[in-house]
Length: 309
Image (tube, rainbow, N blue to C red):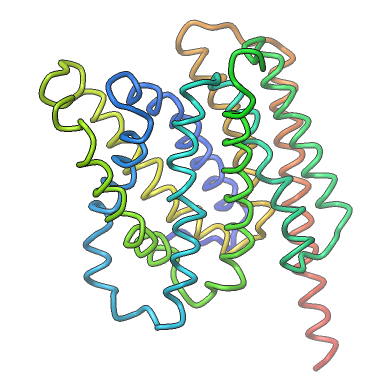
């Protein structure tokens, strides 16, 4: 496991997660070519659950009775319900709009943390969050592809609901699942969502599509990549980051996701404007400020503890 005490490791993990999740919208789009939105979501959860099943068998006895309900909540908020909300939204709205709305996670993380989880109000952290949000919005708008009229605002609201769930889960894990390892939080979370997703999947025309659609096998492969890397592995790493550093710094991964969306576009022959590089710099500056405040907050806490001795 990586040593998350070092800032360079924290940044590396944050950027790696942004790369994985920045690629997920493309994989989701490929999956929707052959399968319906609910089939894509169910496949994502079922494949993730199967991939993590060896951990369930090995670590089952490590989970205490009072931890099950907390893991269930983390599973539903962190991956279960949002897995259905995103593909449903992408049937009606553009991926650019989805990416922009996804950038609301750090903002909701701060708001929910302040209202319900006793997150300390620190101006430096707030400034970093706002700066990152400005950069993310600038990156989306400067691409010229974000158009609210492209989709129904009711579907855009589904993405907003998913970001609220992500933000709630980020605040929830740190105080309520401190004693549970990140791997177990993720793996046993799918123990609750996996059976329901499988039951729904095989009550659809999934098998018929798989046997009659010539492109279904390839698109299923894309969904498998999304499930294994974009869900199972990425959520484990993200939960590790939440438990080790602040909720706000962890959630700022959503600011970097549009950065990778831009570079995917570059590889596909699109042009990158100078303004977009400026926006990327603003995003990274905002995240740096948040992480710097985390280090200062940690030092202040250590000094307080030392002064009481």
